[in-house]
Length: 420
Image (tube, one colour):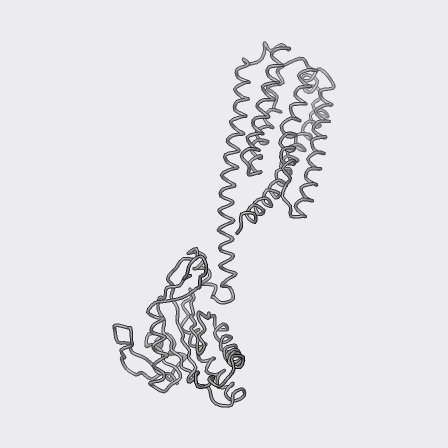
């Protein structure tokens, strides 16, 4: 994934989290406004004992209602931005941080001024800055969260200084307590920024990882079984081991058949022949690993342990399909040789950053290739290893043992089975 594409993905995630942030604040404000109205209606004495000036109560209601309206407008704007799949404008982020930080202090300033008492510095309203700082991390930007903490700390310090200089603070805690609280807001903003930075980093890694997995699955989904795709993605594209049955197929006398044909005619013949053959393999949960001009290699991998049966059924279907095509599509009979063996193979991408190709290797691959070559010597359509035959003999009851044979490139002799 390119850098700009990655940034776009993160920006879209930030838009989603901004919607949630606004919804959180709306919930907090609506609950707070409801509690304020409830106290006014059902506990008027407590309200009158708390506030001397009637303007203080009205300001609380109006400020909360206005803040709700502002957040609703912001939520509407963010929704439009999300619909267009655009990132949040930078001005919106700073506008949001500034409004969230300043508006509560406006209410606090007028309350202290009208009431003439600094005790409101201990108001529960101060706690609203805690969620404001926490959710600022959803912007995934250190500097926005840090700015949030700085604005809250500076504004609170200004309010503290102004209050202690102009109003009676004899019943309040020492000013150092409030200044310390301002410093804590600054530290909280810094911590939120560090958390935002770490989340951004982890989100970037997660998106890259998912993109790599998606690319692998997209690349191999039409060629590789889901078990191999799963193993490949878990290995991050590196080589891995998996149990599989390997099938080799070769067209007999291919060179003789095509030597008088034009390149276009050769290609037409190959497509007409291999198309149905590949369908037989895919229909039995196999994958085509390689297509040569006169043959192919396929493998059957499954965590269910039924790969030998799938490979056997695919080979049986292939021979049946070729028999049908010999009767209807070709002027002369086409013969093939098939070799199958099963075991643990090594699979993975081979190549470099310029070009990579998924490939399989291991003893089962070599063995299957040798068995296919030996069908010429034994004048038969397919040979399988005794190990493979043990897994499928309930399906292939006409197997004939040819005894132990030394295969080229294989140290130990291996019993092979001829299937009719």
